Image (cartoon, helix red, strand yellow):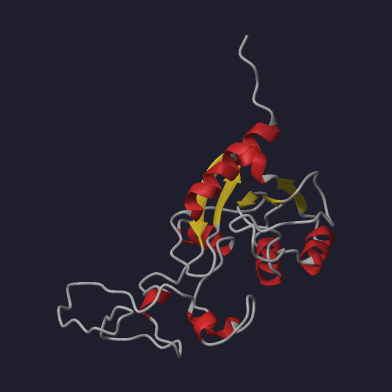
Length: 205
């Protein structure tokens, strides 16, 4: 008799899927992927990055402005408009002197958790009662608010162990970076009746 797949096994599968989408991100600061499911079927996917049609941040100078001439870091100019050269492989906010998490008004990226919600909306797919898998720590407060109003009832993100609230969440894309743990996000998700569970990086490997 064929063994039924447990929900935990399904969670690990979808989180691995979210990790694959993370690899599509061109963000120069950190890469995050997300998968939105309903009844254990994928309905939308996403990763963090600028809106459709907006160039990536490797085309922004040290003031955060987009440039019309493509240059490489050696400052050698090229006149061939058909060739793409990056200005820098470092986040514009970091080049402007902001620390991690600061200067967000200069960030043009849409968070990975929000992109699947927007994709579902464009395709006319209801997110009511859906589950969001995010290959990162606890969603930020802005993402948490939109998750709630999108009708999503469960969020699965990266954590150290166990499930539920007040779990020590570690951002999974770079172990040298700070912990991404947002107590207020956890609290409003709890108040709104959104279940928060975690998957460890070891389970996803």
